[in-house]
Image (cartoon, rainbow, N blue to C red; front, side, top):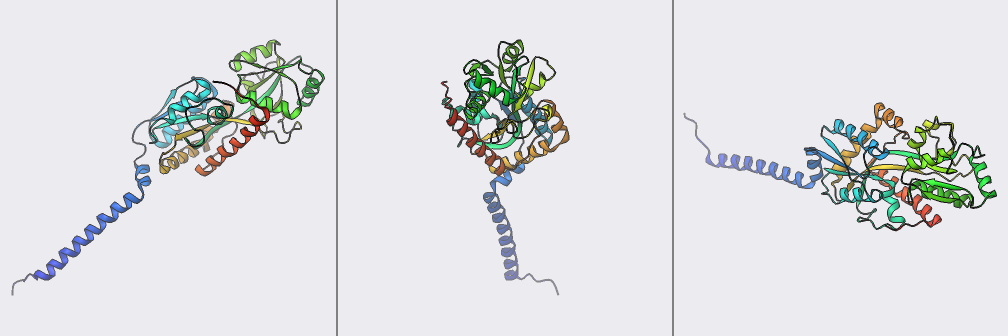
Length: 343
C-alpha cells in the first residue's frame, strides 16, 4: 500500500513551522530593539578612536593621554589617535571633543580646569560642564607642591606662615597662570591662613621655576612633575604637597593637612570623557578597558615615573560621583577666594 499524504496534517505542520520561524524572527527583532546598546557595544569599536588633548604635546596632560591611548589601543584592539587642540586653558579642545558625534569615536581629555574651574571663575565656555560631559575614567591625578627659594629662612609651612604674617604684602608667590588650579589653591590657602602675599602669574611652570631658583621670587606653587624634575636642585625647598596623602615621589614632604590645615586636600587630574548622548554600553566598554589599563603594573610604573599619584580605578557611577564631589570642592574654593577671570 503506497504512502498517502494527509493534506490537513501537512498543512498544520507547515503552519506550525511557519509560526515557529516567525516567532523566532520576531523575538530576535524585539531583542535587538530592546537592547540597542548591547548590539552597539558588540560592534564597538570597528574603526579608529580619536582622543582630543586640549594642551600642546609634551606636557603632563599630553603624557598621560598618550600612555592611556597606547593602553586602550591594546585593550580594545583598535587604533587610538591623539590629537592636540590647545587654547583658552583647555576649553578649545574640550569644546571640539564635546561637539563631535556621541558615538564613542571622538573622546576628550578633560583637565580639572576645563571640566570644572573655567566656568566657575567666569570664563565663557561653549559647553555646559555639567550637562555636556560624560566622565569615563580618571586618567591620573597630581598634587601641587608649595616651594620656596633656597635662602628663604623657613623650613616648614608653619614657618612660612609666620614669616608672611610678620611682613604683610612683602612676599610674592608665583603660579603657572591666573585662574589655574595652582592660583586658586594658593589663594585658598591664603584665606585659611590669613595671609597677605602678592600673586605673580607666569606663563607655565618653566619660567616660574627659573625665577624661583634665581631668587627673583620667594614662593611658588608647582605641579608635582615640575617639582620632581627639580628635586635634586639646591636652589629650591619644598614645604608641603596639596594632596590628602603624601606624594610617593617626594615622600619626605608633608601634606598641607599634616602641616596644620586638616581639611585642605587638592589634586589636579585628567578625565577621559565623552559627549553627552553617548550610548551607555559604549561608555561601560570604555570604562572597563580603562580600568584594565590602569590596573596594569606597567601603567602604574609609567605614570609614577611621569610624576602621577598611584592610579585609582572606578566604575561609571563612581566616576560621575568623583566629578560631582570635585565640583563641590572647587565651588567652595572659588566662592571663598572670589577669584574671577575674564576671557
